[in-house]
Image 1 (cartoon, rainbow, N blue to C red):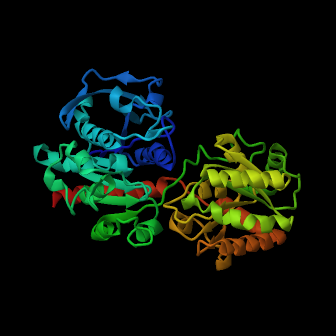
Image 2 (cartoon, rainbow, N blue to C red):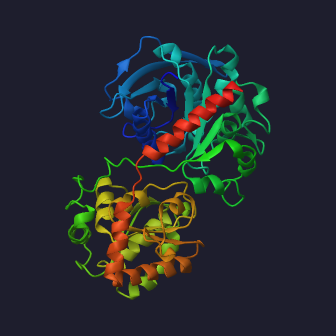
Image 3 (cartoon, rainbow, N blue to C red):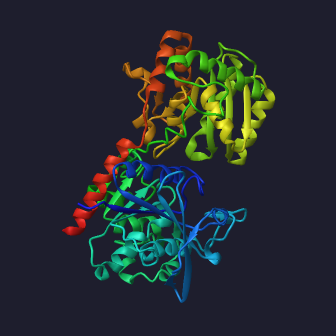
Length: 487
């Protein structure tokens, strides 16, 4: 078989434009796929933040019709990092020249449905401009989800076998709009309805993608099982059960070069398994000094790097922190932003316990890395977590994770209570403050047994989450998608 050609379709790609984990995955996975000898390229809107990048402009623009209007898109490209992987930008000022990717200070953009259709349809038409034809269109999340429907609409005109894959990064975000928005897509009316984009009378972009893609993936095996249930299905469980034979859970990796504690200039002391004790102590003392916490080697420091909203479960931590702080035997370093009530509560705890709690509201990549490096334990009490990257970063930097047994957290953490020789963290089941309190007390007990604690820390640092294994699974998924097209 000739070299397989894969086109990623995504609203964001790190480090060029990023709002969260989706951008990280789209910016990392292609490197691993290229090592498997796939020709992988990416198409992304030319957001305002991308305009300053050095780009090569293609002479032939793309013209597509949406609703009653014809839109023209410029096509330009740049390289992904220091690789030869091409990132194509489709540019249209009226749709994409904005301060945000999905929203600005006034909230979500009201024409996000049109913007999603534009990205998806332009991806299908891109080959006319660049003289390169994908074998697989790999769409990512709701804004690119209609890609497979536009491909199916066009398949009779194609003289080659082409497959589609949709990756669901977070089922909570679905792209819900109106029937009038659907009519602007130009897709056949037969694509509406229960087997298409309609869900509870509204346009649901993610559901349309689920119904139309040849294969579906999500970002961890446990999450793939969870989203077929009422508890985690976010209202789309029936569609996912219907497509269950084509749904595959593939655990996300991390960029182990970008997150390498032996070569991270943001942390004060380099970390590796051989010098874990000395290096971690140095990073901890430096973090305590930076954040104004009392400099104590023998008090465990708990780190948090997170968005502050309901999914992440930090309200559970807020409920139990006053009692934990009374015992004077732990410290907390909090970095995050989101829910204003949670922000105020963490700020107040910092004021009332300045030597035990440090809260930084916002985001700072360097500080995040220093928290991973300087903390003894890392808290992720998420109500649900499709994959989670932070626990993987924490493990790599020797911070033992404490997390709920859900999604990718369950797939990456081997709990201490399992008595496994490879135990690298703690898991709890019920999203309740007292359940979190119990597992934190277990971690305090582990910390008192320094031999067991250091062994668990070494297990954490031994954990490997490279993209290599995931890449092999994606290659197989692409092959299955093409086999399905041949049937």
